[in-house]
Image 1 (cartoon, rainbow, N blue to C red):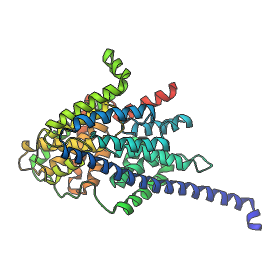
Image 2 (image 1 turned 135 degrees about the vertical axis):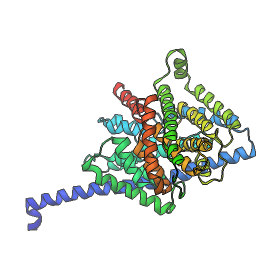
Image 3 (image 1 turned 180 degrees about the vertical axis):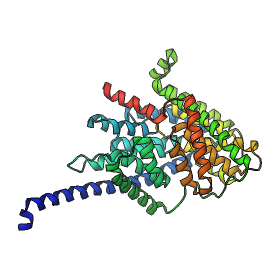
Image 4 (image 1 turned 120 degrees about the vertical axis):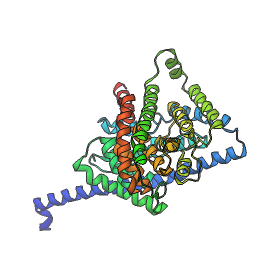
Length: 432
């Protein structure tokens, strides 16, 4: 045909075909990531429910099940699924920065994604204070990288798109997915890939919406700050959350890099025994906590937020200790949900200092402040909490608390936790 024999028209057809193929890969990947996030959610919720059923039947079961589960989890991680430790966000960041495909595949792959899902579920099954949202980032990046291999051409931005789509689907927060991609994963805005990344996020979000329905993560709140005391609580809560979040990050980075001296050498030589000890210590803490510190902490945070649980000042500290022990043990699992739960506990703790201020408002401030202090990503912090609750009247106070927390966190820990940990994976890849 004359049309096809025209070199200019044939070239135009090739260009258009390549462009649509690229778009299709990102959309298809987003759909798969959304479905994977939904399946991960159902598995994680079922595992957590089974653990709480066990505790209801035998309150001291955690003294056996939790340390044993920690030990089995770290053993499987080290021997079967290396690089599945922790939240998975540092691995996704490191993989995005690596140019060697073999080194990248060691951090994001379908095999690793499967291991991440199974081991996170195992952690929740034994009561670990971990979340599934961070791991969904590594799963999303792994799925998108695998889908990208279907294309004969290299597709830049796939890992970033998969990670962002994972967050969007896990929390049902598409805007937060975009912000995480900009502020955490890339720390820049890639104009060329932005439309494709947003397409992947939309596809993942629609898939989650189709399977789960429309919902807000923590329900809808309608509180606001109308008094001087309420606005005074913003910098106070922001500072406390930032300092506590910075402390958590510093501890986790210190253990990830290895403690100095004989203690550090023993932990490195006996990681399974160390995980066992962390699990046992967490079980002991759980026996004395006023509210359950096992699992993601979602139910406790929502109960404090909607007023169905008592405002106990000590819950945040107990949850902080439980999450720290789970994190330094090295088992797969995220810190998003536990951090929000610690922040809710912080808000409950400062509530008596500000009588007359709605407790729900203080809890929202605590959630944003502590989360911003941990991840040192203030925009992500206030966007994700605001999108989870649809409380637009609290947007400005949440923004202010997040930026105060970020400044205070940097006084304790100079590096953002995810980028500090990702540097270790990049160095590991360079040395191997």
